[in-house]
Image (cartoon, rainbow, N blue to C red; front, side):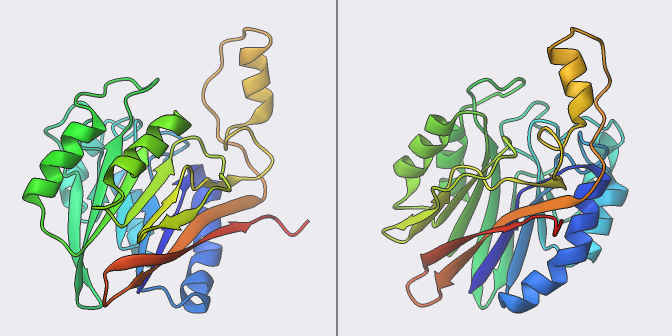
Length: 258
């Protein structure tokens, strides 16, 4: 079994690069199940139900979110209409939407779980450890896939090492910069950050001139996603269907041709 996960989709450029490359990747890599992080899909912050349905129509089986899950007010009332949308379990408010999704793929049950780290993150309630322990008690599956949306590298690594004997896949999201530490240890696959799908000539997908104006010159700015050619980042994880263990993880990074 092969699972494709694509990192934070940022704005219209991220959605466009997804539409351009997704089908090709799925065919070339013989993907059985596709997950994306869509927390920045709507103008760089948050997601709407319309965009969630649009991403699903491209061939996405599950959409995870992050600290911007509720940035668009509309989603507070429409999240329930998006069956493939998953919000972090420990992000306030905790009573909207669902934080995990179980689907059958290749005869096995995959639980896709979304959590936020605590370090440098706002509006996070319980620790990811409290949530994960609770989910492992309640949710029965053959394969556990965790999107840990967090800022700190050490926090993500610590989480994976703590659960690697019980969880087959832990992928990090949030920083938008792909790390080169992908590995498989004793049947558990890990990467600190998958990276983003967004504008290549940008600062984390945001217009670089606007960021410089705000950070360097102290000007008040509005968040504006960058335009231009897109970058696509992700990973392909292979699972041995007999042992139900991860056996390989491969990074994908598609940069603009020019």
